[in-house]
Length: 438
Figure 1 (cartoon, one colour):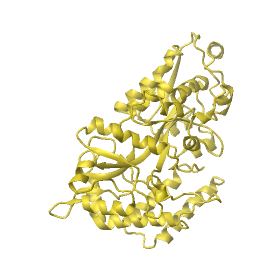
Figure 2 (figure 1 turned 90 degrees about the horizontal axis):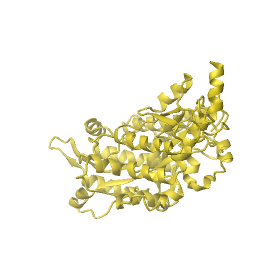
Figure 3 (figure 1 turned 120 degrees about the vertical axis):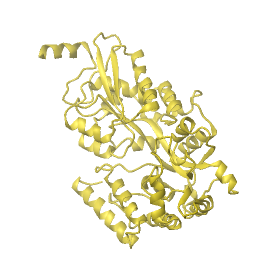
Figure 4 (figure 1 turned 180 degrees about the horizontal axis):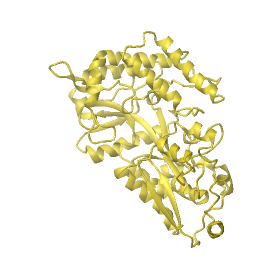
């Protein structure tokens, strides 16, 4: 067996010791005869799975000896479990950057710098905001595959019927619009919500809302600073105004009758929600699942105190990496290069998934399909006002802490906002301290 393993390693530059790789394994070469299968984990399913699989298989044009085994519906928990059990995929694709700091700091994802240096790749072909959310403390352990930008969706028929000619630009306008667009049943229950304030629900998460107030998570000292931030207080006060308008119990009952976020029964698809914050990918879901819904897109409304924030919003993206223990890191890198840097592949993925392509060249490629609704997100992407999540050594624990707090706050079980936020700060800072800092 040892001799066979040595022979395979000699025949295939893509093969490397299975102990995790050092980041400098030889890349696969197109003339090799040795057959090799790369297992890829992603969370993609259904229509999106087929689009991504097609993109992954483009590698065979250069390396016909490599087969791709794409396993969809694999979330971050399943990925982490596979690595801990010693049976990781060769390539990991994650929808979120929330755990990147944790994965970079503990070696879950391998350092890609040796590959970038060896292949003389200039990462400046990737926009700055995207470079920022794919590194942790200067260490690049992932590459961007596609980017997400979170904007504002509105049902144009509903706005017209309410006498509203343009989407709201401020939170004061948003509150006014929500009241005008909301419809109640005779028994007082909600028939149509002008805007859903429930958090976390759909894309109503603290991280998606925070940029609209300019709220930041971590202070210069590396500690959570929510209680000392007027932006966070203003954001939660605004949310409470919306909750109080509807009534918490009514909102919870209404929410329970809405479909899954990625199903055809999504509340916006069914005309149950008039306005919402969501990612650019929703344009593809609407085209596929609710083609009769007439909608517009715009940047999210911003706090009245932060008018200069208009045009910005939240950004994150799909990331792709080599997990610890990957058996063929050299070949894995070749696939990552294609999925993160090849213009044709990125444009095809962007056209199919309706995500924002993550290199400067792909953004300006003439084959990129751009309609007015999608152009909103490209304009936001290039506007320089997008904010990502901070990467921390505790992964997404700080995000979960704030979203958990939001649930209690909107339910009326937090009597003092400042005291409540101080408790969240303490929880986050304790976790950071145990990991050795932010």
